[in-house]
Image (cartoon, rainbow, N blue to C red; front, side, top):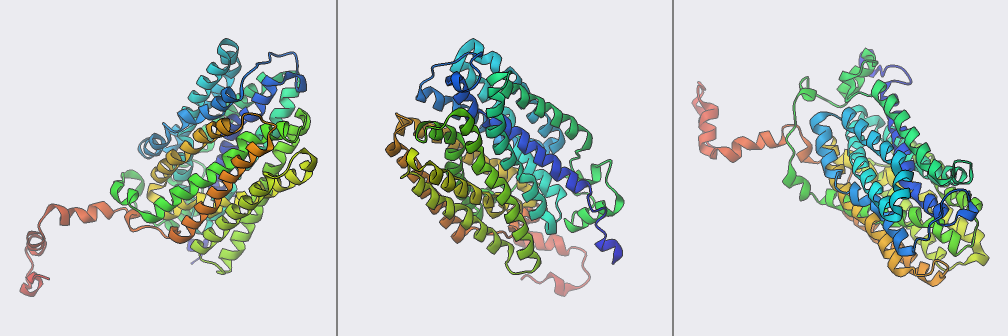
Length: 483
């Protein structure tokens, strides 16, 4: 009994892996999202550092820059899910982040040569590199997280999204006003990516069995709780493609993630522009107040995490009920605040900031609500599910800035922003309704290691012949009777 309950040290290697994922997400989100502040700094140098070039880009050209990252990002999602199952998470994740860091380092050079067109090009390349990251993350969590700790480790690691949001908006604004100006935003992002690669190279492992630093007790705890066979890490489990693409809970997950991304990406990419235009806030205030909603999101993510631990430990809610409850809070409260924001102008800027902070803060519950659901449905194929979902989800932030560019012709026009926020609110509401009705946190039958191989005899051999072969050599004639 002692051996079965011994989880190893209080802070074991599974916690180190979660910390590495947290730092990974923070790093890649800084590189991905600093564009919101960077574009404002590059097109309005008077509010930052006037010693660096200023560009006169139109709203349509800005929308191309905002969406260009996702033109590349969508192409490697599915590939990332396959590659990390084929070659292991450690190497695929390393090269993805390293490539993203190289793109960050080259961004100022590209802009100097080709302005917004070149900026779009380097952002596409960054998207290609980062596209493999999240499928790897979910596969890594599935391999390292005991079921009892999956919410905790997954939730903690995913708070890197909020940390990255805050850092990208707040720190980028401060860097843009410093001596290194807007090019420094890209250089700092690159340095963080390379530093993370060094940590990952030393401490990461594809699974607990391959880790050089894990203790015997923790290794036994992880592998026994995941119920892995001795040859699990040596075999490639066939992927049940047909079952995945026809799974109703999985399709519901894809729908709800797309709807959530529409609302969140609208806020992430457009908050600096909205505050600069409608609320008439200068760059210094813009950097702080743009980051404030995501600071609330970061704090609220820990509130959700603690609440989830208490509810699950006390068996007050099943995992499915917990996911649906948290997802409802994270979707419907932002839905209401987005509608309210659309009716405010610069005379009510404090209320607009408050509503925006509340909406984005409560949205952090989507991580526990639906983001980790890929691991619930299929721990063995988590990277494949995440690759498929993220491919669909990535279409959304490609389209969102373009839609905003079509609707908003004057960024000071409150009526145009009302339409933008109303669309996001409707999708938040409808998406959660789909998840409430069709979603589940129960592992699907097609996740079993032998699901496809167990079906093969029945598919390949007629039933009567199969039974004769099975009973050949049996001494009991009664065992040969056909069922």
